[in-house]
Amino acid sequence: MSIPKKSLHRKIAILFFVLLSVSLVGPSIQAQQKASLPGESIANSPQMAAGDQWVLKTNRGLRSHKVIDVKSDGTFVVEVKDKEGVVLWHRYHDKDYRVLKTDYLTSVEKAKSEAPWEKVLNFPLFIGKKWEDEYHGTGADDTPRTYKNSYEVEKIEMVDTPVGTFSAFKIHRNFSATGIKKNQDQYYWYAPEVKIVIKLWHVGKLTTKEGHEIQNELVSYYQPAAKDKLKLQAESSSITPQPHVAGNIPDGKRLGNKSEQPGPQISVTGTRWAVIIGISKYKDTKIPELRYAAADARSFYDWLVSPQGGKYAPSMVTLLIDADATLSKIKKALFEWLTQAIEEDTVTIYFAGHGSPQSPDHPENLFLLPYDTLYDSVPTTGFPMWDIETALKRFIKARKVIVITDACHAGGVGQAFDVARRAGRGVTVVPMSSNLQSLSKISDGICIISASDDNQFSQESAQWGGGHGVFTFHLLEGLKGKADYSKDGLVTLGELIPFLSEQIRRETKNAQTPTVAGRFDPALSIGK
Image 1 (cartoon, rainbow, N blue to C red):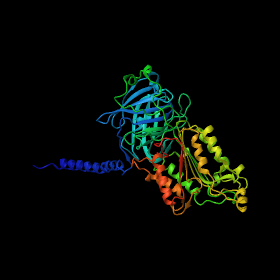
Image 2: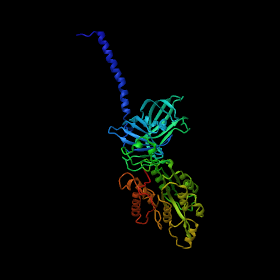
Image 3: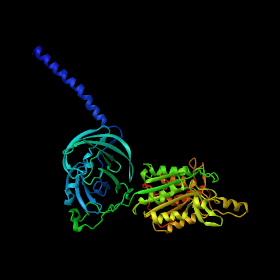
Image 4: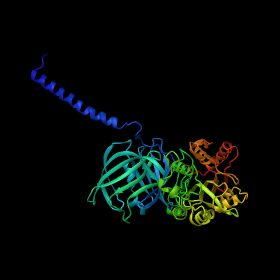
Protein backbone atom coordinates (compact mmCIF):
# COMPACT_ATOMS: atom_id res chain seq x y z
CA MET A 1 0.00 0.00 0.00
CA SER A 2 1.52 3.33 -1.03
CA ILE A 3 1.55 6.46 1.17
CA PRO A 4 0.54 9.77 -0.43
CA LYS A 5 3.50 12.12 -0.81
CA LYS A 6 1.76 14.93 1.15
CA SER A 7 1.08 12.58 4.11
CA LEU A 8 4.63 11.24 3.94
CA HIS A 9 6.08 14.74 4.01
CA ARG A 10 3.87 15.64 7.00
CA LYS A 11 5.07 12.59 8.99
CA ILE A 12 8.69 13.33 8.15
CA ALA A 13 8.19 16.87 9.36
CA ILE A 14 6.61 15.69 12.61
CA LEU A 15 9.45 13.24 13.16
CA PHE A 16 11.97 16.03 12.53
CA PHE A 17 10.41 18.31 15.14
CA VAL A 18 10.17 15.45 17.65
CA LEU A 19 13.87 14.74 17.20
CA LEU A 20 14.65 18.45 17.37
CA SER A 21 12.69 18.82 20.60
CA VAL A 22 14.52 15.86 22.12
CA SER A 23 17.85 17.36 21.15
CA LEU A 24 16.86 20.69 22.72
CA VAL A 25 15.18 19.39 25.87
CA GLY A 26 17.52 16.44 26.52
CA PRO A 27 20.64 18.46 27.44
CA SER A 28 18.60 20.64 29.82
CA ILE A 29 17.32 17.61 31.71
CA GLN A 30 20.79 16.09 31.73
CA ALA A 31 22.30 19.30 33.04
CA GLN A 32 19.79 19.36 35.88
CA GLN A 33 20.65 15.80 36.79
CA LYS A 34 24.35 16.57 36.83
CA ALA A 35 23.81 19.70 38.91
CA SER A 36 22.05 17.67 41.61
CA LEU A 37 24.99 15.31 42.01
CA PRO A 38 28.07 17.49 42.52
CA GLY A 39 30.23 14.93 44.28
CA GLU A 40 30.16 15.38 48.04
CA SER A 41 28.64 18.86 47.86
CA ILE A 42 25.16 17.55 48.49
CA ALA A 43 23.04 17.21 51.60
CA ASN A 44 20.30 14.60 51.75
CA SER A 45 17.52 14.64 54.33
CA PRO A 46 18.93 13.83 57.78
CA GLN A 47 18.18 10.68 59.73
CA MET A 48 16.63 11.81 62.98
CA ALA A 49 16.93 9.93 66.26
CA ALA A 50 14.78 10.14 69.36
CA GLY A 51 16.57 12.44 71.78
CA ASP A 52 18.18 14.71 69.17
CA GLN A 53 17.85 18.22 70.57
CA TRP A 54 18.75 21.77 69.64
CA VAL A 55 18.45 25.06 71.46
CA LEU A 56 17.98 28.15 69.29
CA LYS A 57 18.24 31.79 70.23
CA THR A 58 15.27 33.27 68.36
CA ASN A 59 13.22 36.45 68.17
CA ARG A 60 10.93 34.87 70.78
CA GLY A 61 13.76 34.02 73.14
CA LEU A 62 15.38 30.62 73.64
CA ARG A 63 13.55 27.66 72.11
CA SER A 64 14.36 24.00 72.67
CA HIS A 65 13.51 21.64 69.78
CA LYS A 66 13.64 17.95 70.67
CA VAL A 67 12.85 14.87 68.59
CA ILE A 68 10.45 12.86 70.77
CA ASP A 69 9.37 10.20 68.28
CA VAL A 70 10.70 8.64 65.06
CA LYS A 71 8.60 6.22 62.98
CA SER A 72 9.90 3.36 60.84
CA ASP A 73 9.07 5.33 57.68
CA GLY A 74 11.35 8.20 58.78
CA THR A 75 8.60 10.60 59.89
CA PHE A 76 9.33 12.27 63.21
CA VAL A 77 7.84 14.54 65.86
CA VAL A 78 9.58 17.55 67.38
CA GLU A 79 8.56 18.98 70.75
CA VAL A 80 9.27 22.68 71.25
CA LYS A 81 9.65 24.33 74.66
CA ASP A 82 10.40 27.82 75.85
CA LYS A 83 13.22 28.61 78.27
CA GLU A 84 10.96 27.97 81.28
CA GLY A 85 10.33 24.42 80.05
CA VAL A 86 6.72 25.01 78.96
CA VAL A 87 5.73 22.82 75.98
CA LEU A 88 4.61 25.14 73.16
CA TRP A 89 3.81 22.73 70.35
CA HIS A 90 4.46 19.36 68.71
CA ARG A 91 5.41 19.54 65.05
CA TYR A 92 5.12 16.53 62.76
CA HIS A 93 7.56 16.14 59.84
CA ASP A 94 7.93 13.71 56.99
CA LYS A 95 11.28 12.04 56.40
CA ASP A 96 12.38 15.00 54.24
CA TYR A 97 11.77 17.56 57.05
CA ARG A 98 8.57 18.92 55.48
CA VAL A 99 5.98 20.06 58.03
CA LEU A 100 2.91 17.78 58.03
CA LYS A 101 1.00 19.39 60.89
CA THR A 102 1.45 21.24 64.17
CA ASP A 103 -0.39 20.61 67.46
CA TYR A 104 -0.37 23.84 69.44
CA LEU A 105 -0.24 23.17 73.17
CA THR A 106 -0.17 26.71 74.59
CA SER A 107 -2.73 28.99 73.02
CA VAL A 108 -0.88 32.20 73.83
CA GLU A 109 1.99 31.02 71.66
CA LYS A 110 -0.13 29.86 68.70
CA ALA A 111 0.33 33.08 66.73
CA LYS A 112 4.06 32.99 67.41
CA SER A 113 4.87 29.44 66.43
CA GLU A 114 6.03 29.79 62.84
CA ALA A 115 9.59 28.59 62.23
CA PRO A 116 10.46 29.68 58.69
CA TRP A 117 13.77 27.81 58.73
CA GLU A 118 11.80 24.55 58.66
CA LYS A 119 10.00 25.63 55.49
CA VAL A 120 13.27 26.58 53.79
CA LEU A 121 14.66 23.04 53.70
CA ASN A 122 14.08 21.20 50.43
CA PHE A 123 16.29 18.13 50.16
CA PRO A 124 18.58 17.25 48.55
CA LEU A 125 20.51 20.50 48.87
CA PHE A 126 23.26 21.37 46.42
CA ILE A 127 24.82 24.55 45.08
CA GLY A 128 22.67 26.16 42.40
CA LYS A 129 19.41 24.45 43.35
CA LYS A 130 16.35 26.74 43.01
CA TRP A 131 12.69 26.32 43.94
CA GLU A 132 9.56 28.29 44.83
CA ASP A 133 6.62 27.92 47.18
CA GLU A 134 3.74 29.80 48.80
CA TYR A 135 2.23 29.52 52.26
CA HIS A 136 0.19 31.37 54.87
CA GLY A 137 1.77 32.19 58.20
CA THR A 138 2.39 34.73 60.93
CA GLY A 139 5.36 37.05 60.58
CA ALA A 140 7.90 38.00 63.22
CA ASP A 141 5.80 41.13 63.84
CA ASP A 142 2.77 38.89 64.69
CA THR A 143 0.93 39.83 61.47
CA PRO A 144 -0.78 37.02 59.46
CA ARG A 145 0.42 37.07 55.84
CA THR A 146 0.61 35.13 52.60
CA TYR A 147 4.22 34.53 51.57
CA LYS A 148 5.43 33.91 48.02
CA ASN A 149 9.00 32.62 48.17
CA SER A 150 11.86 31.84 45.84
CA TYR A 151 14.96 30.03 47.11
CA GLU A 152 18.48 29.34 45.91
CA VAL A 153 21.36 27.41 47.47
CA GLU A 154 24.23 29.84 46.87
CA LYS A 155 27.32 28.21 48.39
CA ILE A 156 28.83 26.02 51.07
CA GLU A 157 30.86 27.90 53.67
CA MET A 158 32.20 27.69 57.22
CA VAL A 159 29.92 29.44 59.69
CA ASP A 160 30.74 30.50 63.25
CA THR A 161 28.15 30.04 66.00
CA PRO A 162 28.38 30.18 69.80
CA VAL A 163 28.51 26.37 69.64
CA GLY A 164 31.39 26.19 67.19
CA THR A 165 32.20 26.37 63.49
CA PHE A 166 30.33 24.25 60.95
CA SER A 167 30.25 23.62 57.22
CA ALA A 168 26.85 24.88 56.05
CA PHE A 169 24.74 25.34 52.92
CA LYS A 170 23.87 29.03 52.47
CA ILE A 171 20.26 29.36 51.27
CA HIS A 172 18.96 32.69 49.95
CA ARG A 173 15.24 33.31 50.37
CA ASN A 174 13.60 36.18 48.50
CA PHE A 175 9.93 36.68 49.31
CA SER A 176 6.96 38.97 48.94
CA ALA A 177 4.23 39.11 51.55
CA THR A 178 0.87 40.82 51.94
CA GLY A 179 1.24 44.12 53.73
CA ILE A 180 4.94 44.49 52.87
CA LYS A 181 5.72 46.83 49.97
CA LYS A 182 9.11 45.51 48.90
CA ASN A 183 10.47 42.02 48.47
CA GLN A 184 12.55 40.87 51.41
CA ASP A 185 15.75 38.82 51.60
CA GLN A 186 16.78 36.30 54.21
CA TYR A 187 19.73 33.93 54.47
CA TYR A 188 19.74 30.54 56.14
CA TRP A 189 22.70 28.27 56.88
CA TYR A 190 21.93 24.56 57.12
CA ALA A 191 24.66 22.38 58.69
CA PRO A 192 24.33 18.65 57.88
CA GLU A 193 26.51 17.76 60.87
CA VAL A 194 23.91 19.01 63.34
CA LYS A 195 20.84 18.43 61.13
CA ILE A 196 19.40 21.92 61.50
CA VAL A 197 19.55 25.51 60.29
CA ILE A 198 22.26 26.95 62.53
CA LYS A 199 21.80 30.60 61.61
CA LEU A 200 19.18 32.92 60.07
CA TRP A 201 19.80 36.51 59.04
CA HIS A 202 17.27 38.99 57.67
CA VAL A 203 18.49 41.74 55.34
CA GLY A 204 16.77 45.09 55.76
CA LYS A 205 14.69 46.98 58.29
CA LEU A 206 11.90 44.48 58.93
CA THR A 207 11.83 43.74 62.69
CA THR A 208 9.72 41.99 65.29
CA LYS A 209 6.82 43.72 66.99
CA GLU A 210 9.19 44.61 69.82
CA GLY A 211 11.71 46.10 67.38
CA HIS A 212 14.25 43.24 67.54
CA GLU A 213 16.21 42.13 64.48
CA ILE A 214 14.98 38.95 62.81
CA GLN A 215 17.63 36.33 63.37
CA ASN A 216 18.06 32.83 64.77
CA GLU A 217 21.20 31.10 65.97
CA LEU A 218 22.07 27.66 67.31
CA VAL A 219 23.35 27.87 70.88
CA SER A 220 23.24 24.21 71.95
CA TYR A 221 22.74 20.73 70.55
CA TYR A 222 22.69 17.14 71.73
CA GLN A 223 22.89 14.00 69.59
CA PRO A 224 22.75 10.82 71.68
CA ALA A 225 23.15 8.59 68.63
CA ALA A 226 26.49 10.22 67.77
CA LYS A 227 27.90 10.66 71.27
CA ASP A 228 26.17 10.35 74.61
CA LYS A 229 27.57 13.66 75.79
CA LEU A 230 26.44 17.26 75.48
CA LYS A 231 27.96 19.17 72.60
CA LEU A 232 29.31 22.66 73.13
CA GLN A 233 26.64 24.78 74.74
CA ALA A 234 26.12 28.50 74.75
CA GLU A 235 24.41 31.69 75.80
CA SER A 236 22.54 32.13 79.05
CA SER A 237 19.43 30.15 79.78
CA SER A 238 17.81 27.54 81.88
CA ILE A 239 17.51 25.11 78.97
CA THR A 240 19.12 21.65 79.04
CA PRO A 241 18.42 18.34 77.30
CA GLN A 242 16.55 15.82 79.43
CA PRO A 243 17.04 12.07 79.50
CA HIS A 244 13.40 11.23 78.66
CA VAL A 245 12.64 10.02 75.14
CA ALA A 246 9.50 9.43 73.14
CA GLY A 247 7.08 7.19 74.97
CA ASN A 248 8.22 8.24 78.44
CA ILE A 249 6.72 11.74 78.50
CA PRO A 250 3.70 11.98 80.82
CA ASP A 251 0.40 12.87 79.16
CA GLY A 252 0.22 16.17 81.02
CA LYS A 253 3.42 17.31 79.32
CA ARG A 254 2.31 16.06 75.91
CA LEU A 255 -0.99 17.90 76.19
CA GLY A 256 0.66 21.07 77.40
CA ASN A 257 -1.20 21.10 80.72
CA LYS A 258 0.58 23.99 82.39
CA SER A 259 -0.54 22.97 85.86
CA GLU A 260 1.42 19.75 85.45
CA GLN A 261 4.56 21.37 84.08
CA PRO A 262 7.39 20.80 86.57
CA GLY A 263 9.08 24.17 86.07
CA PRO A 264 12.36 24.37 84.19
CA GLN A 265 12.79 21.27 82.05
CA ILE A 266 15.94 22.14 80.26
CA SER A 267 19.03 24.18 80.84
CA VAL A 268 22.06 25.03 78.76
CA THR A 269 25.38 24.14 80.31
CA GLY A 270 26.85 27.15 78.61
CA THR A 271 29.31 28.16 75.97
CA ARG A 272 33.09 27.89 76.09
CA TRP A 273 35.32 30.91 76.48
CA ALA A 274 39.09 31.14 76.34
CA VAL A 275 41.86 33.67 76.95
CA ILE A 276 45.14 32.61 75.33
CA ILE A 277 48.37 34.48 76.19
CA GLY A 278 51.82 33.82 74.79
CA ILE A 279 54.93 35.98 75.13
CA SER A 280 58.32 35.19 73.61
CA LYS A 281 59.72 38.70 73.15
CA TYR A 282 59.55 41.38 75.82
CA LYS A 283 59.58 45.15 75.41
CA ASP A 284 62.34 45.42 78.00
CA THR A 285 65.26 43.67 76.31
CA LYS A 286 66.80 42.84 79.70
CA ILE A 287 64.17 40.14 80.08
CA PRO A 288 65.44 37.03 78.28
CA GLU A 289 63.49 35.99 75.21
CA LEU A 290 61.73 32.66 75.06
CA ARG A 291 61.97 30.75 71.81
CA TYR A 292 58.53 29.24 71.42
CA ALA A 293 56.06 30.64 73.99
CA ALA A 294 54.24 32.78 71.42
CA ALA A 295 54.20 29.91 68.92
CA ASP A 296 52.79 27.61 71.60
CA ALA A 297 49.95 30.02 72.34
CA ARG A 298 49.21 30.52 68.65
CA SER A 299 49.12 26.75 68.04
CA PHE A 300 46.78 26.22 71.00
CA TYR A 301 44.51 28.99 69.69
CA ASP A 302 44.53 27.47 66.19
CA TRP A 303 43.45 24.13 67.62
CA LEU A 304 40.68 25.70 69.72
CA VAL A 305 39.01 27.44 66.77
CA SER A 306 39.65 24.69 64.23
CA PRO A 307 36.55 22.83 62.95
CA GLN A 308 38.58 19.64 63.38
CA GLY A 309 39.75 20.66 66.85
CA GLY A 310 38.04 22.45 69.69
CA LYS A 311 35.39 24.05 67.45
CA TYR A 312 35.33 27.22 69.54
CA ALA A 313 33.72 30.22 67.92
CA PRO A 314 36.59 32.68 67.28
CA SER A 315 34.49 35.42 68.87
CA MET A 316 34.65 33.45 72.13
CA VAL A 317 38.46 33.39 72.25
CA THR A 318 40.77 36.31 73.10
CA LEU A 319 44.31 35.85 71.77
CA LEU A 320 47.13 38.00 73.15
CA ILE A 321 50.53 37.40 71.55
CA ASP A 322 53.79 39.29 72.35
CA ALA A 323 53.16 43.05 71.99
CA ASP A 324 49.40 42.54 72.39
CA ALA A 325 49.91 40.82 75.75
CA THR A 326 50.30 43.97 77.82
CA LEU A 327 49.39 44.22 81.49
CA SER A 328 46.31 46.32 80.72
CA LYS A 329 45.04 43.97 77.99
CA ILE A 330 45.50 40.90 80.17
CA LYS A 331 43.54 42.56 82.97
CA LYS A 332 40.85 43.67 80.55
CA ALA A 333 40.47 40.13 79.24
CA LEU A 334 40.21 38.55 82.70
CA PHE A 335 38.40 41.30 84.61
CA GLU A 336 36.07 42.62 81.91
CA TRP A 337 35.71 40.37 78.86
CA LEU A 338 35.24 37.14 80.85
CA THR A 339 32.52 38.72 82.96
CA GLN A 340 30.23 37.81 80.05
CA ALA A 341 30.55 34.14 81.01
CA ILE A 342 27.66 32.82 83.10
CA GLU A 343 27.63 30.02 85.68
CA GLU A 344 26.83 27.33 83.11
CA ASP A 345 29.79 28.28 80.90
CA THR A 346 33.31 26.86 80.74
CA VAL A 347 36.39 29.12 80.75
CA THR A 348 39.93 28.16 79.70
CA ILE A 349 42.89 30.42 80.52
CA TYR A 350 46.24 29.60 78.93
CA PHE A 351 49.55 31.37 79.62
CA ALA A 352 52.95 30.73 78.05
CA GLY A 353 55.75 33.07 79.06
CA HIS A 354 57.97 34.07 81.97
CA GLY A 355 56.97 33.81 85.60
CA SER A 356 58.95 35.21 88.52
CA PRO A 357 58.75 36.05 92.22
CA GLN A 358 59.24 39.59 93.45
CA SER A 359 62.74 38.88 94.79
CA PRO A 360 64.80 36.18 96.56
CA ASP A 361 63.61 37.64 99.86
CA HIS A 362 59.93 37.55 98.84
CA PRO A 363 59.45 34.31 96.90
CA GLU A 364 55.83 34.17 98.03
CA ASN A 365 54.92 37.16 95.79
CA LEU A 366 54.70 35.59 92.35
CA PHE A 367 54.08 37.32 89.02
CA LEU A 368 53.38 36.39 85.44
CA LEU A 369 55.32 38.73 83.17
CA PRO A 370 53.30 40.60 80.51
CA TYR A 371 54.98 42.04 77.42
CA ASP A 372 55.51 45.48 79.00
CA THR A 373 57.01 44.25 82.29
CA LEU A 374 60.02 46.29 83.39
CA TYR A 375 63.03 44.22 84.35
CA ASP A 376 63.87 46.50 87.29
CA SER A 377 60.27 46.82 88.47
CA VAL A 378 58.57 43.44 88.33
CA PRO A 379 56.33 44.09 91.40
CA THR A 380 54.69 47.14 89.82
CA THR A 381 54.60 46.06 86.17
CA GLY A 382 54.09 42.29 86.43
CA PHE A 383 50.72 40.53 86.69
CA PRO A 384 50.34 39.28 90.30
CA MET A 385 49.30 35.68 90.71
CA TRP A 386 46.76 36.77 93.29
CA ASP A 387 44.99 38.72 90.55
CA ILE A 388 44.12 35.40 88.93
CA GLU A 389 42.50 34.51 92.25
CA THR A 390 40.72 37.86 92.16
CA ALA A 391 39.43 37.15 88.66
CA LEU A 392 38.17 33.70 89.65
CA LYS A 393 36.49 34.95 92.83
CA ARG A 394 35.08 38.30 91.74
CA PHE A 395 34.77 38.49 87.95
CA ILE A 396 34.49 35.04 86.35
CA LYS A 397 31.15 33.46 87.21
CA ALA A 398 31.64 30.23 85.24
CA ARG A 399 31.57 27.14 87.44
CA LYS A 400 34.00 25.23 85.22
CA VAL A 401 37.42 26.83 84.79
CA ILE A 402 40.60 25.32 83.35
CA VAL A 403 43.85 27.24 83.96
CA ILE A 404 46.89 26.04 81.98
CA THR A 405 50.33 27.58 82.48
CA ASP A 406 53.48 26.78 80.55
CA ALA A 407 55.63 29.34 82.35
CA CYS A 408 59.42 29.34 82.33
CA HIS A 409 60.30 30.23 85.91
CA ALA A 410 63.86 29.11 86.47
CA GLY A 411 65.89 31.38 88.70
CA GLY A 412 63.69 34.46 88.79
CA VAL A 413 63.75 37.68 86.75
CA GLY A 414 64.82 41.15 87.88
CA GLN A 415 67.49 43.29 89.45
CA ALA A 416 67.08 41.73 92.91
CA PHE A 417 68.02 38.31 91.48
CA ASP A 418 71.07 39.77 89.74
CA VAL A 419 72.28 41.20 93.05
CA ALA A 420 71.71 37.88 94.79
CA ARG A 421 73.64 35.96 92.14
CA ARG A 422 76.56 38.40 92.26
CA ALA A 423 76.62 38.03 96.04
CA GLY A 424 76.91 34.27 95.64
CA ARG A 425 73.56 33.60 97.23
CA GLY A 426 71.80 30.43 96.11
CA VAL A 427 68.79 31.22 93.98
CA THR A 428 66.32 28.36 93.78
CA VAL A 429 63.70 27.79 91.15
CA VAL A 430 60.51 29.57 92.15
CA PRO A 431 57.50 27.67 93.57
CA MET A 432 55.16 28.65 90.72
CA SER A 433 53.39 25.31 90.58
CA SER A 434 52.47 25.24 94.29
CA ASN A 435 51.12 28.75 94.08
CA LEU A 436 49.01 27.87 91.06
CA GLN A 437 47.66 24.77 92.74
CA SER A 438 46.37 26.88 95.61
CA LEU A 439 43.98 28.56 93.15
CA SER A 440 42.08 25.30 92.85
CA LYS A 441 40.90 25.71 96.45
CA ILE A 442 38.79 28.74 95.55
CA SER A 443 35.84 26.53 94.61
CA ASP A 444 34.88 23.21 93.07
CA GLY A 445 35.04 23.00 89.30
CA ILE A 446 38.47 24.63 88.89
CA CYS A 447 41.23 22.60 87.25
CA ILE A 448 44.80 23.93 87.40
CA ILE A 449 47.37 22.35 85.08
CA SER A 450 50.98 23.50 85.30
CA ALA A 451 53.69 22.48 82.83
CA SER A 452 56.23 21.67 85.55
CA ASP A 453 56.57 21.12 89.25
CA ASP A 454 58.38 23.32 91.75
CA ASN A 455 62.17 23.21 91.40
CA GLN A 456 61.80 22.47 87.67
CA PHE A 457 61.71 24.65 84.60
CA SER A 458 59.66 24.24 81.44
CA GLN A 459 61.71 22.96 78.53
CA GLU A 460 61.37 24.09 74.92
CA SER A 461 63.18 22.92 71.82
CA ALA A 462 62.95 22.51 68.07
CA GLN A 463 62.81 18.76 68.62
CA TRP A 464 59.16 19.02 69.63
CA GLY A 465 57.07 19.65 66.56
CA GLY A 466 59.71 21.85 64.95
CA GLY A 467 59.62 24.36 67.80
CA HIS A 468 57.44 24.07 70.91
CA GLY A 469 57.60 23.73 74.64
CA VAL A 470 57.51 20.05 75.49
CA PHE A 471 54.36 20.59 77.54
CA THR A 472 52.31 22.40 74.89
CA PHE A 473 53.53 20.04 72.17
CA HIS A 474 52.13 17.04 74.03
CA LEU A 475 49.06 19.02 75.12
CA LEU A 476 48.20 19.51 71.43
CA GLU A 477 49.10 15.93 70.52
CA GLY A 478 46.80 14.68 73.26
CA LEU A 479 43.92 16.95 72.27
CA LYS A 480 44.28 15.90 68.63
CA GLY A 481 43.51 12.33 69.60
CA LYS A 482 46.51 10.60 71.13
CA ALA A 483 44.97 10.93 74.59
CA ASP A 484 41.62 9.53 73.44
CA TYR A 485 42.06 6.23 75.24
CA SER A 486 38.35 5.39 75.03
CA LYS A 487 38.36 5.94 71.25
CA ASP A 488 35.07 7.84 71.41
CA GLY A 489 36.32 10.92 69.59
CA LEU A 490 36.36 13.06 72.75
CA VAL A 491 39.43 13.80 74.88
CA THR A 492 38.43 14.38 78.49
CA LEU A 493 40.56 15.80 81.30
CA GLY A 494 40.52 12.33 82.83
CA GLU A 495 42.33 11.09 79.71
CA LEU A 496 44.47 14.14 78.95
CA ILE A 497 46.11 14.54 82.36
CA PRO A 498 47.69 11.04 82.64
CA PHE A 499 48.73 11.29 78.98
CA LEU A 500 50.60 14.54 79.67
CA SER A 501 52.24 13.18 82.79
CA GLU A 502 53.55 10.05 81.08
CA GLN A 503 54.70 11.65 77.84
CA ILE A 504 56.48 14.66 79.37
CA ARG A 505 58.27 12.68 82.05
CA ARG A 506 59.40 10.22 79.41
CA GLU A 507 60.54 12.92 76.95
CA THR A 508 62.50 14.88 79.57
CA LYS A 509 63.85 11.85 81.46
CA ASN A 510 61.90 12.91 84.57
CA ALA A 511 63.35 16.44 84.50
CA GLN A 512 59.88 17.92 84.06
CA THR A 513 56.64 16.73 85.63
CA PRO A 514 53.30 18.42 84.95
CA THR A 515 51.08 19.00 87.96
CA VAL A 516 47.34 19.19 88.32
CA ALA A 517 45.11 20.33 91.16
CA GLY A 518 41.44 20.90 91.79
CA ARG A 519 38.10 19.21 92.31
CA PHE A 520 36.60 18.95 88.84
CA ASP A 521 34.65 16.57 86.64
CA PRO A 522 37.15 14.30 84.83
CA ALA A 523 34.59 13.96 82.01
CA LEU A 524 35.05 17.67 81.22
CA SER A 525 36.88 18.38 77.98
CA ILE A 526 38.72 21.44 76.68
CA GLY A 527 37.39 20.97 73.18
CA LYS A 528 34.27 19.56 71.61
